Image (cartoon, rainbow, N blue to C red; front, side, top):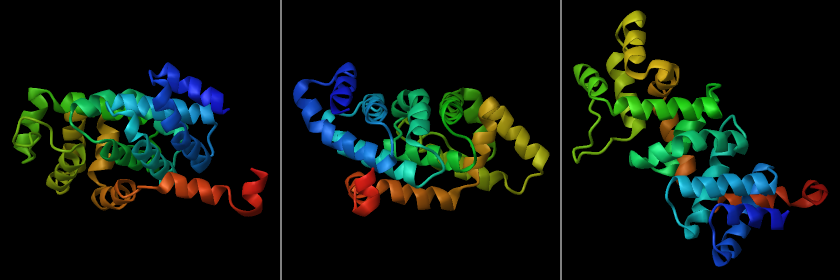
Length: 228
């Protein structure tokens, strides 16, 4: 299994020295999330590459993945599928791994997970980049630009949109989301109503340093761990 995990890292472009450094982290991820090692390694490696991170960031990656999987209604495989769709465009938009994972966790808690969640978030980013969407958002008092030519956090944009449209009639409100996000409107609407949840889950993911190793240790403890 370890050899299989190392092979996955090699296929992801890791050098031998980086593989030796990364394999303890992905072992923790596999145990912390009850995932086959090869699958956990593939997801961790793809996430690292999707956000243009370096091998030394693997501990951060596995901590975020562990915290997301264990604090939301989804498995690590669901997160992996979602990130395969959204990671590159989220990274291009300046979104962090932690913020992207938080959005995916909230979508999973609303029964939108895996490729559906990744596709929805990817569409949301693409739609927000259009001039027509930005004009429509300005009409309801929501800014997309962070003041330096980049995106504000997606969570901030959607929460502002939710707050600024909550007093509108349901038909008008749903029409605005449909115009802005098209097939991603349901996901965007769910996230726009999740201000408190963004902070709660976001903090668990943001401050997750060491959680993969700790959870793996707990999973290996006592009789249950011995059987596993």
